[in-house]
Image (cartoon, rainbow, N blue to C red; front, side):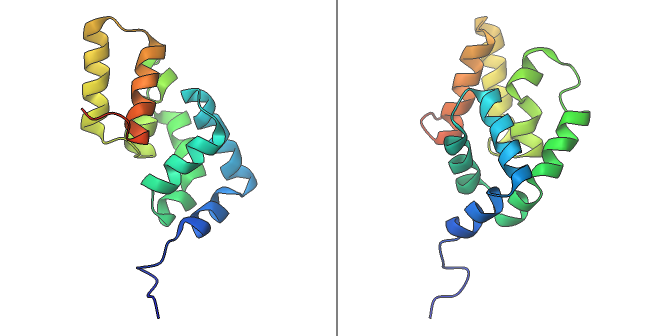
Length: 125
């Protein structure tokens, strides 16, 4: 018999993300990054545990109310959202990407692309 810790929990995680409010949060996050919702859902399933997924809506609401108060590019790419509130990119990595982008004079779209590539594991820093 396989213990619960050895089983693949992707099906259960997907079930959590199918609720109406979770779907809305996934869509909002996906549109913020310019990727399809299914890809965002896959990122969440891969990087987050079930407790984090359960609180996804509350975490998004908290970020929306209090996160990235500086506005600008940080708010548009979800700097704190994806590094603190819904941690799919480690904070130090997100800080490095953002600093490098600012130093190079890159625009919002290039920073967003780098963040997505980090999330999907296509890029290492």
